[in-house]
Length: 312
Image (cartoon, rainbow, N blue to C red):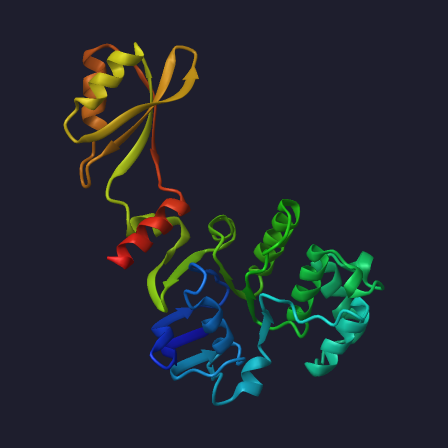
């Protein structure tokens, strides 16, 4: 559905986007992640036809956005970081205006009603946009992106400045849109990507430094494996025994307790499976293991490690 090949955007000697390539399939929700100034918004603006590239190709639905921008834009719904709203219009006036400039052919009344319902702005449809809260303005911005029912939806920092409740509502909306659209979510908020996206593309200094499924992104940087182990036995002795097992890099008490068992976090060396050695060591001491589960890195840790690797 989306294909970017060897895309470059430079301003003199400064490369905002530096020879990036990726493809996004129909129905994917992809998080485009990176720090401020990484090249996220530049890429989104090129992909939506708001900005020309220096070189390379950007296609949406097989249509080159630079060669045929009019046709390509018909299948894209775009919410920029600052929603393109007219503050002196009511919500309905604005949605009707967008319907007309998009030359939408769907039944106007039915389609706009569906868009209002999906974005939950029915109750403010007759209010002036300038009188709406930031959360509602963001919803109106999403509503304009949905008009015409485009197969590709692109959001650039959709939850910036929203309160926690509004953020959850927008995330749920984006997740639901993924059932019938291809969605790109450009953001620097890690928890947002983790909770919404199927796949993560990380960009830094104009270059893609990671492209993985959300559930497997930790494999890019994970140098060891971590486990939570519940063991019944004297804390200090158990901890010392765990630390002495070959292949265990570290062990610490987490503070979690369940009846007479305590939970320990252990890290193993890369490529070493310490589960059997831990089991044997505990059985020799007659300390029962009642829980043993792998613990993955969270997205914040992954992001920091990937950034550190990229900067070396």
